[in-house]
Image 1 (cartoon, rainbow, N blue to C red):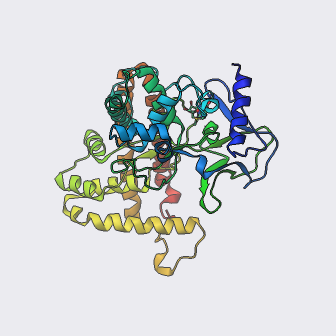
Image 2 (image 1 turned 45 degrees about the vertical axis):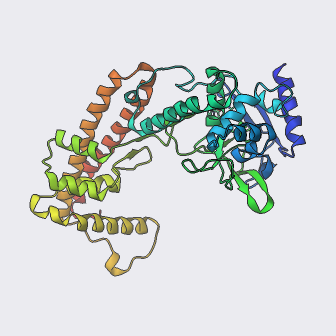
Length: 430
Ligand SMILES: C[S@@+](CC[C@H](N)C(=O)[O-])C[C@H]1O[C@@H](n2cnc3c(N)ncnc32)[C@H](O)[C@@H]1O
């Protein structure tokens, strides 16, 4: 069957199911991106471009209510979790002669570009920290499903078909809160997923023009524009604040410019880097930073070291005799941060909230902190550069992005030090 024939069948099928999609079309979204949804004309903000009856959402409960699947799981006393139920659906339904879902199933990709689909034997340590936990969870889920589904089936499981079904659910499900269903086990995994035909043709962008949500009052699922768009624009939703590691592992693609790039620096790493940078840290510093539990993660959007990172460093820089007061520091830094934000947002401050003028002692402390941050970032850079050379070449792009972000953060802190050291700033406000 030709691509046009498949698409035309799918559009008829969608209309028959009450899916409304006036003013949009599905077509190729370009190299490697599969299909996407495009506006035919220019559109104003807030318009609903896609609507479907809430009953059309493909949830685990809905599958469990279909005669064939109900019988199967009841006969085997199998209590699937939501994810397993949906994977089983795609696994079996694809091969079902005359399935009512065929026009939709024919639109689904036949292959995927994730590391799992590509059979890349990635090791956990090939991935940056930001995605490692997700990668582990994903592998555990896949292994669990490989272990559990065969007991339901009368023929040996076909691993390629299972991987296909698993990818369909992974790459296309959307967060929806489902009512509990007696046949679905949500004791360990919440029942918060659905695959939504047509809506699942939307690609991802961090600057998405659309939001997809359940309109409970009207019993509809809608895709609404959140900004005006020009004629022919591709419509996007945001899959989440995912960095490229997560996009690659979960969906099999990456973005050229990803505003959600981040470098995780958990407390144990921060402490190890600080020690390498020659900062003298004792058990009290260590306990204080661990108890404060502030995240030193670097984000692309940071204008300079985050408040949390700076506060951690301030605690690490405390003299032995003052370390007992670390909570006062964390608290007063919190107040200072509130004042700064209020000033930026143009709020009037009461006289006791006003920012005190920076005295010489404060300026010296800030310079010392910024220099410590710069040294810690220098050590982080060395560590990440070292890792970049050791990891599987296919994953190196993720480590290079981490290096770029660290370098940018370092440049910003160097600028900050220069500003603080400029004589005219010495009595200025912070
Ligand atoms: C929910 S589906 C979207 C529809 C899909 N393009 C299709 O042809 O069926 C998610 C998949 O679309 C692709 N995708 C989504 N957003 C993308 C983007 N910004 N760039 C490249 N591929 C993207 C990825 O393959 C991802 O696994």
